[in-house]
Length: 220
Image (cartoon, rainbow, N blue to C red; front, side, top):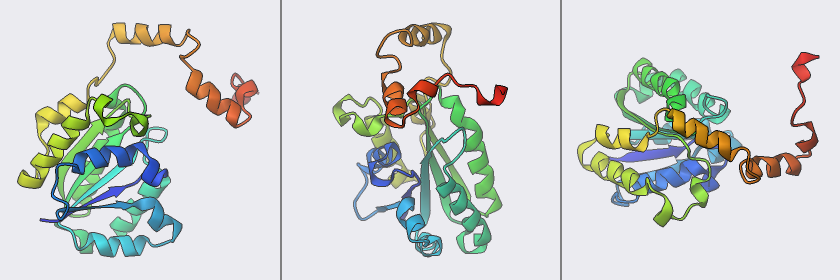
């Protein structure tokens, strides 16, 4: 069996999605898989070239972050192209890696359901979705301190040998599915500390929007 993992993040090789895919494929045989970056095909307007490459693999993973509770535009465009050429991709096995910065992984569940239905509509075989919340900054955390790197590696090892995603491991990596009341209280307290919004405030300042952070343009 051959396996193509497509990184659908607009950040390309320096993305959290790519880091998670790297963990997933780490235990696999190098001859078994290939990682492709959707950004590179988009920049060259070569979606058709990617479809041609996808046709040569038996199993395909499409990984992406949530952007405002939906896929990045790159990925949606790929889905549309796949739909146009569904006859050429039918019968292949598809799985998805959906990650988001929200601490609760249930934010990803509606998109996972869409991916399952999309796979069915193009005549593919759905293997399932790896869903992980709280993934912003994954690319910056050393593997030793990234608690889910081993789970991803084990998911990948099992997939290579058995062509399935282990349900117990999927549930483990998705925790917390929803924050508990104590978890929400902890986050509320953190937001009152100087470091609570440190990263986001730095981004606002970097883009000249810090002074406008409380603006309400739609109320005017």
